[in-house]
Image (cartoon, rainbow, N blue to C red; front, top):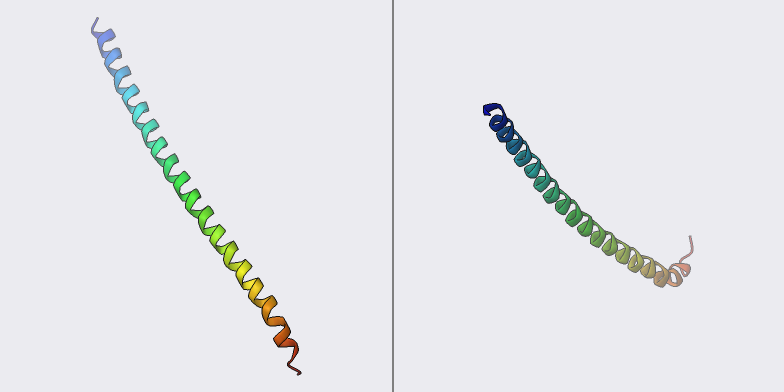
Length: 69
């Protein structure tokens, strides 16, 4: 009977350990998702800035054509 109780107790400890790992994994997954969302927003901002820079270059092209080297 003591072996059964000891085994049940050990099983409970193992289950608690598994639950703890699962909670930590879920938290890490949320952190990764948040970082990915932030990175996506940053990439969209970089893309918008690149588009603006390209437009500025196109706007300046006629003025550059006036210069002769």
